[in-house]
Length: 199
View 1: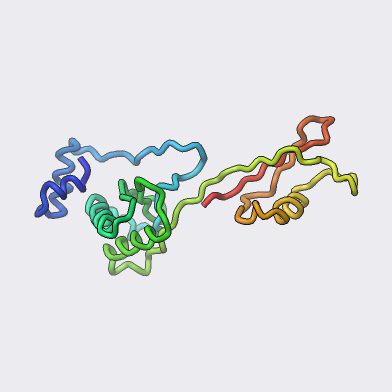
View 2: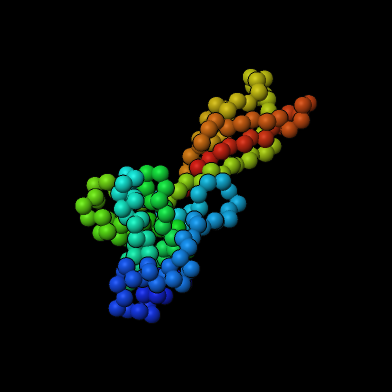
């Protein structure tokens, strides 16, 4: 059963007893980290990363159900469209899984909630951020040979002549240099693969 439902059913129940009730309902077993199905590599955009040292993260995660309740109460009060589902400790911080993708204003509210729970350690907490995912971009039917110099197109040329000169690539952040692949051995057409960050 969801901790919010327990809180709604037993309004006067203390936070420690909510954990106890939840353990009884769930058979005393701790749930594994949720598995999120995605089409791309990397963490889900329905997660919020809050960096902090490991000791502070463990202290915060001692009572995750209470932390989820306090975050959700704040989010519900200001009528935001997200809810925290799960909190787990990762190396150098915590990850809060949510039901929807979080906006920048939501991140500010979650930062206030986390800092209010760790009043003595607020200097150890970095502002929350969304994870970055890796995507790729495929550009097809690009001439492999430069007609003026009779040299094949290079990754440097692609960055300079295609990516920087075209407004549709303005907000793209490259992970690595573009890769040029000839369609066929005797062909004059190339495919360009570009790995990009999606934030």
